[in-house]
Image (cartoon, rainbow, N blue to C red):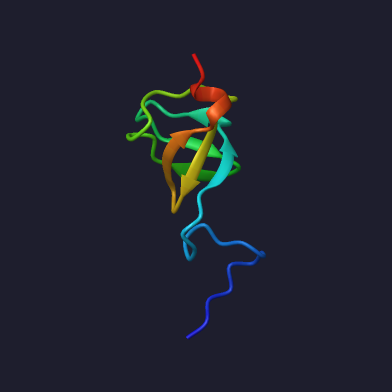
Length: 69
């Protein structure tokens, strides 16, 4: 069986997190990044404009620039 994700990179099929910018955040804490819902439980509250490293719809960490004090 083959999967066609429609691009040259698939965040679901690979073990690589990709940077995504938060467009908006719902009352439930789910971030919308480029039309994709991203769970942010592991990184805490985020705001629009924040850049996250995302794998399979889960924010794994803030990008280094966002995490700097």
